[in-house]
Image (cartoon, rainbow, N blue to C red; front, side, top):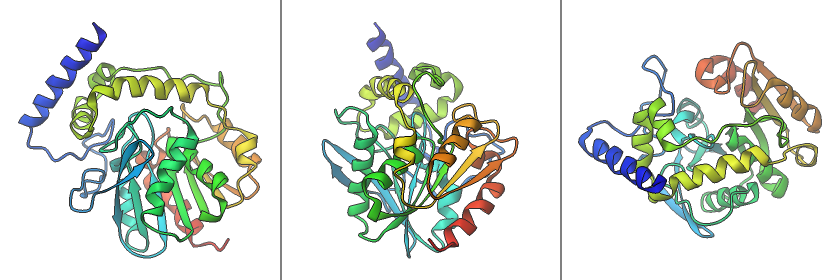
Length: 291
């Protein structure tokens, strides 16, 4: 019965998408007053590319020229477009590599278990298809955790990390409730409509979301990983972040050998959405600093 309801939802939302003339550029919870990019990141057919990563094709886009920066969006209901203002600015001076992770955007889901090893391997397939130069990684939430794993596993490939909303994660410390596509559609129907339209395997999405939240709630990310990081890391924390509470980010900062910390006052998890200027004012000088 649950599967039939899900398939009915997918069919309905895809029909609504077919009737809509809107360009697919939207992030979860976007409001009419949000400042957004004019480029449809994550759905830009003019520059989109694919690379095979084990059992899945991973979609990515490249913008600009110069030293490489990998920009990684959030998990669950994350998407490349939420990182749009960063990509706009970074692509003026850098080559910006913008992947969609498994189950997000146009990337396949595949069958591999969800682990940060798998996520790091996927992203390194994208990086290796694009550049052999050491790079900076800017990641938000799940994207930042993936950045830590890449830097720990491939230290010679990562120069710096900018990590937004990603602190120490211990099973039981907090629990993100599992949600269905129906739940997300009630909050933001347009986003779910677009997500289903982009996804090459929409029938697998609910199972993927179930597995993702189960994985994240039980994943341990602590001193072993943070202590292994050899590159400089800028931790950015929203003071009111409920997903990565301030104390967890401060703990990660203390565990990391070469770390800086910026706290964005009165900001939630998506601190860069509510106060982009404050976040960017911390990132810009960090990128210019010598190692």
